Amino acid sequence: MIGASFMRVLMALAFVTASVASGKAAGAPTYDTILGKWCGTKANPNWVNLLITRDALTITHLPNNVVNKLNIDHFEFTGATVMIHYLAAGALKGVPGNNPYRVSYGDFGADGKTMVQLHNSVQPRDAYYTRC
Image (tube, rainbow, N blue to C red; front, side):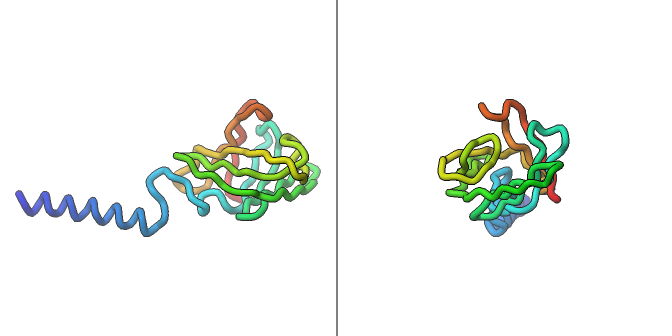
């Protein structure tokens, strides 16, 4: 009996240690979750591809391939979402500028290959992305 309880404690400790070592708590996004290339779908309100680095949010507007690179001020990790605070001339067009804006992403797939840009006052519905 004591052996089984001890084994359960050891397994729980191993799980917690593995979670901490990987830098991810269950369901909590990190930089690894959000950084990289993301391809949008034609069904999105604004069809774009994204390249997210620690310093820049690069938006490729499709299908004309116009590229805008926005400076990122900071990231905010809250629960299961990531909010990117960036500087732009206007929130909708993604044109470089000096005005502060923010965009939130969530619903990250367990496999790290999908995410959703959450709707807001500028974008009235969610936009879906997959890793490129």
